[in-house]
Length: 316
Image (cartoon, rainbow, N blue to C red; front, top):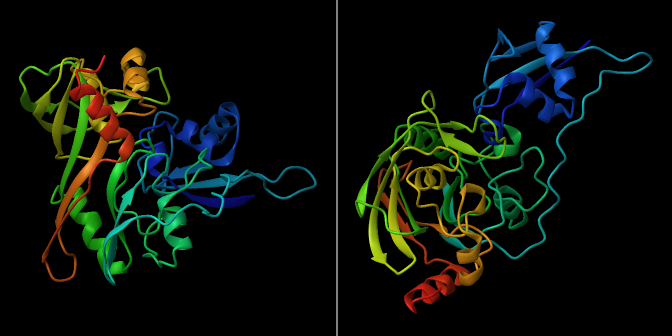
């Protein structure tokens, strides 16, 4: 019998223990469920049941029986390949933190099933040393952006910054603002969406507004209305996975190009969008060491500006 301790990455947030275990170890769900039923899995030190759901940062301890004639097995998630792309744009940097302008198509950190580029690998390739607190694959990561969302991310370089910034994000003390182009015209043009979010009950890749989900609050204001869509300024109180995308879809105004959440593919094609029109354009927080204000902004990348120009020209 070999015991393995597995930190839970953000991408598995909300899954049942057996489902998360199957993804982490490359097991079938049946095999993972048998381990749970056999009392061989502990979640944060407590015996797990198959109805338990995991949360990011939790620890799974798994007792793996050794197969006949061999050692205990269990595949580990594939390592992210070394980063060989262009350097990440650095907006602000000091000994404690670095703020980068993340491109779309890049994950914040390695996770099961993801083999593309990551912010952590890109920073390592640029010679940056990050805080070592937290799970090994998420060192320095205090918040995330979706793979398909571009924009500003702060990453901790010192242990002080990691601890303080994690607490500030958790306590909603960081001002995070996004630009989003959504289909149609939200009514009212400015408002607040207060609706709990959790895993979609029947679609593993999606999240949804569900009655017993985690509290989630999104504020939005219309900057400009076009014939087919609206440009919104969005501010998050909470930071749930896919929060803006889920909330906009829930009020029937999905982000343009967001086919996963019901966006019109015809409009996406007309605007030249291959991902959701969503960009983290502003970040404001107190510096973790001296409390001074850090306020940074970022322009949307070229493909989003082109889509906006097409809308301004009366688009499709």
